[in-house]
Length: 238
Image (cartoon, rainbow, N blue to C red):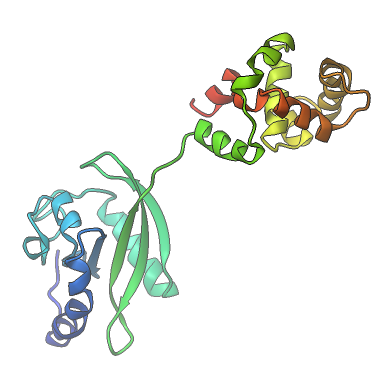
């Protein structure tokens, strides 16, 4: 059950909290909310107000989840746990959630809100939209440093025939994985990876010495940096 605040606490919100965050509420590029210790919305941005079913921050003020609007994430128990953490540590924390309105992933930075007397009277949450780059995108960004015209090397790629396992190991080497990490990925020993590099990959690229560095340089110059093996890609999509 919601317990009203004392006159002194209400004055804190009216005199200090609302003026401090009013300008933020008018910023259409920011998604944030300030709640009191019992979840009532003190002030929020228009985007946040839209998410919980209100036209703007004026309509959303003084509203409570499960009473005036449907809770968008978590449970009352989650809120209590968060406030207990904030009250005991006086520190901020982060968490991620999927917004029910737009089905997007957000990072929330949660901070305690202090009264002029130094006690915690609520919490502020600022949401940032997360746009996770695909694994393929990470690799493409990673390979920009090579500045290789892979299109011009397409014919060379076709001349060097690799097994699926060789292609995977070569790709992971180019991407910066260590032999130990590749072994863990394939669930084999590092010595097995080293043997495959020295006895299979290096000879196919006509390297007279066993050198991972030279192997990577040769593979990149032939355009192999542009090939993402399905086995590697799909392992991150499951």
